[in-house]
Image 1 (cartoon, one colour):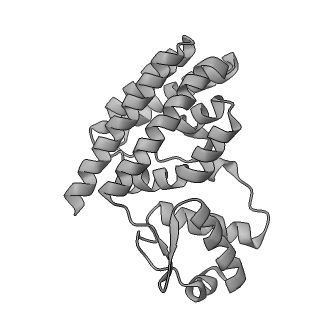
Image 2 (cartoon, helix red, strand yellow; image 1 turned 135 degrees about the vertical axis):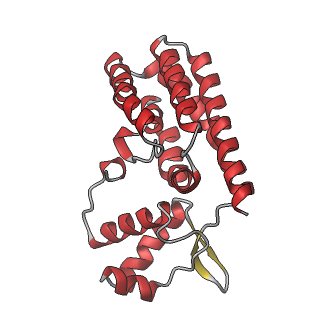
Length: 221
């Protein structure tokens, strides 16, 4: 599924979406130097289009520019993960608190339906939570906060980098079932309109996820 069901309007959009997808999924590995010439040939677009796509990816925090080096994919490191998840814990905890106050009854019903539809997937597959876009549990809660500044900070500023860590290092193994159970408790708190509990459970959930991915990063070093 396309991320947030975005529509590619221009050739620049298409290059941006494709490059972002390949970076997030690890097709283009972390720390890779990005060559405008090579990418323009690969995607069959002009270097100007590639340059614009790289600039947009820099704003998403998954590409960085360094003097005398140029643009490269960000590195995934334990230190970077800890910093990212510290911010994510705070912002998504706030999103869960606000969602408990502002999500409509229909949105909460749909969130419960999403979890119910995923229960068999959790039992039968290790690669849970890899879908982007509207099916993503966290994304729905972020939107449910109804706070445009918070949505922008998370969705446009941090979310793609979060997905890099999750997709490339994240949810295979025993953590899948426990994470799904945590999601159910968060939704229950939102359903009960309990903002304090929703925030606490979300913050704890993200801390557990951080610890899980951090251990995988350390093992891969």
